[in-house]
Image (cartoon, rainbow, N blue to C red; front, side, top):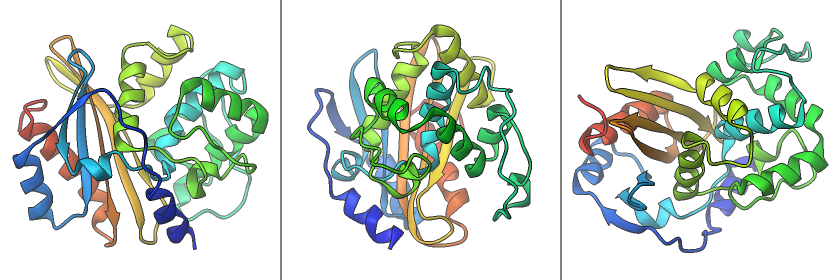
Length: 262
């Protein structure tokens, strides 16, 4: 049923955006070789340009799953539900699908292992009314969280497209969200994945309906040569190996587009 809800939300196509889309044959070939149904989009805010594979899917909204941990962190800090990314939250004491989730921790540790119960505890602290107001203020996806404060990003009704993800993340990378610079910097810090001499890679995965078939995400941005390149990949998750495919395919797309070096 969760899978069906996710697919139904997938048909809610977002309105057209101003940025022009350019299809990339190399990225398309990467998806073909991987045998993956999905999309990849790269957004350059300096040029207001979009490039990638499968534009119709890139403009279609899906449940954000754990990619919502990024705005959830921003909202938690902005509302004072937590004082910092290291404020410890309780996981609730219930058995979890992963032993690593079965301990209290702060957002810094929780986002690194995508700890669902910690972020559900954060959402309950924020509360439904404040959460709805802030999701709308941030302009995240369809801005609809429904009536269940600790499940809306996992089951819906919240939904967002890959293009919208890149627009949101570009604003975070540029400190252009309606949240203090200090809070945005704190959240950027906890989603930093990798860095080299002249680049930094930030990102977050998500998997709607995990571990069953659903929509998998990898979203983030690269800072390189004083430019921001925001990206979003989503794909149909079918096999046990698909969680790793998200990042492997996403990095290959970034390399094909010259944003990262092989």
